[in-house]
Image 1 (cartoon, helix red, strand yellow):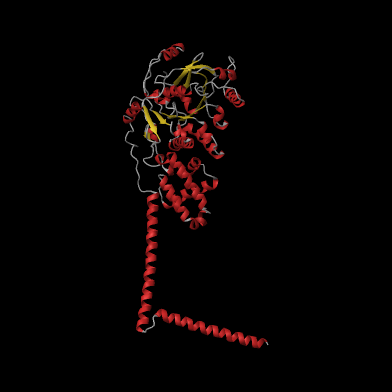
Image 2: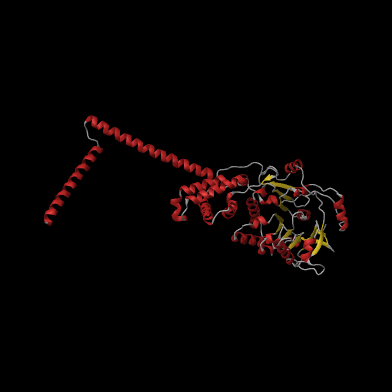
Length: 492
């Protein structure tokens, strides 16, 4: 292994990805069963061996094997021998397992405030009007010092917003009750998808994803996503949030000798599926600028058409596994994939894509000048860690020996918007009850005073007031009658 490259495989020469160019992002594509997960695994091994922490979502569970030493299977040894991989050996990669639901790894949480209204709107599929109301809720929370940590905080704030809608209209605009109600219903759906576990404290410290061992190896962070993928919007929004957090919190480093971190986004099509133009623009901007923070983003998906052209243009390092070309869309995908490679006169790229066997790929990386290398038909090297999933017992042992064990296992629930707003509501209710009681007491006192006055024959102040009013009214009516009669006489 080289200190400055990641070994990918063998073509007519060794195919290696330069660490200095690894923050220029990458794309791994190919049909189901063509070897994308193994490619992701060997790239992650190479980065971690070079001291670069990696984060990847494990959609099928197969990637968990990276935490265990591989086994010298005949097929793997023969593949290594065929490609001249003489120093092929077996090792486990130091791994930290994560899980939004806290079952197959350390819980990952973030707060409602950190997620922000834009991503929450995307997560819940809100309309423009509903997103506007959510933005107002966040502004009000900032103004009144209400910490939004979990879903019950947001629910309480929205209820308060609905109750105060008329009072807030002048400052914030119309807040229709049906709009607030629609957001509340979407929160129920989000809760059913697992939002209750995801939103809260302690929130994830990004630094825990960027750990290295005492020996200088980068940790492999594996997100258990086999359950999460059943809620595709939650999956995509979480990974987008994580990418945005890395962008916002990491300092500028320019072009380092090796990345500070590499982020693999499996099933990348979910990020762009039905995404509004504004969100796609935000993703494009983040991908474009995050490389100056030393972060490499690698999208893994079946079809290059899954990624918008504006984002695809940012992917400098490419590994293309086999694609089928039976339908017009598949044929277009093959043509698109071929067009993104620098041609090799030794073969036709478009034909090669449909002829690749399992474990083969077309590879093109950026050279040290930032220029794409000529595409090569490559045999991908076998992984040194285990291929396939680990057992639940092995996973739990790794979790309990993790350097972050105990930091996230217990949820916290400090005072936040929910508690503050509930206290305000109780105070308002108590004040209203007291006011009602005071008025009732005053009414009863007045009634008792009148009754006592009648019994003693004395007039109360209220009785005198009523008599005076009646007398005054009588005089006014009499005068009106006189004026009316005189007026009518005069007119005659």
